Length: 305
Picture 1: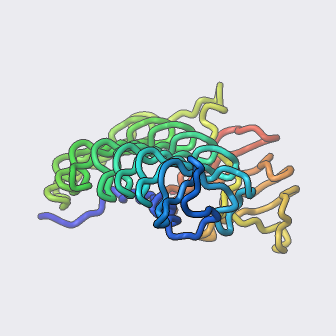
Picture 2: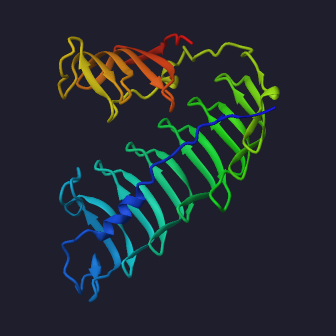
Picture 3: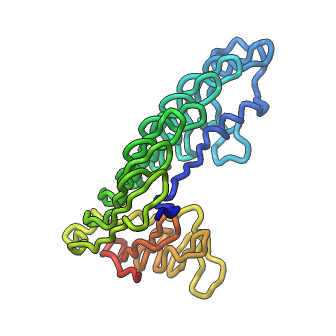
């Protein structure tokens, strides 16, 4: 008997270079038919050649007026070649190759700390070929392969933040096919499921318990420490429930946009010093409770299943 099953959630990345491309329609502070080689506009108002956009050209942005925000080249008002976009802290945000005004070729995205977030080939508004996505600690999160139509094809791999494989299996034309294997975080097999054209054969499902307990590296806990910096969607509430100050000092409880507790403990100048950091997956399921003491990662608490 075949049953429809969503085994693996699709990871969707907001490809913001497309919105950046729409900035072409904005009004810039440059005179037409200028002799300058930078930010040149021809006699009919088309952008040509090398362009550098600064904070003064970005509406409601965090850039200073003279800070570089984006740079690349135009040909007859359309982006061509390599374009680079920056974060307000100066780090690279995107490096995207354009052809005739559309992303076409190698593209790489970065976290605001400078580490790679995602890289692959982009064509006709779709990923094609190999795509890698990364955790903020630098570990590979997903290794996907896409066909020319932008659908997943061949082996697909999901990984835990510690580098262990979480899910591995084959896709055909965007759908699961054959045996899909799931693994525990310690590397032991967790489940095997047989798929046909995206449908799971419920009679084929095999579930396994881990053979050994996953032991954290207590001798070097910093190697397993999660990132606990404040995120944009986190909101702080003081112990009394009043509105929290801009700079966090003392005891605070932080919540994400889904109203789940993300941090509970002591802060010093916005740094999480002592307490518990709650870490969720993309589906909002609690995965870890990281315990910190005096600014140092001390290990993980027990997550009740």
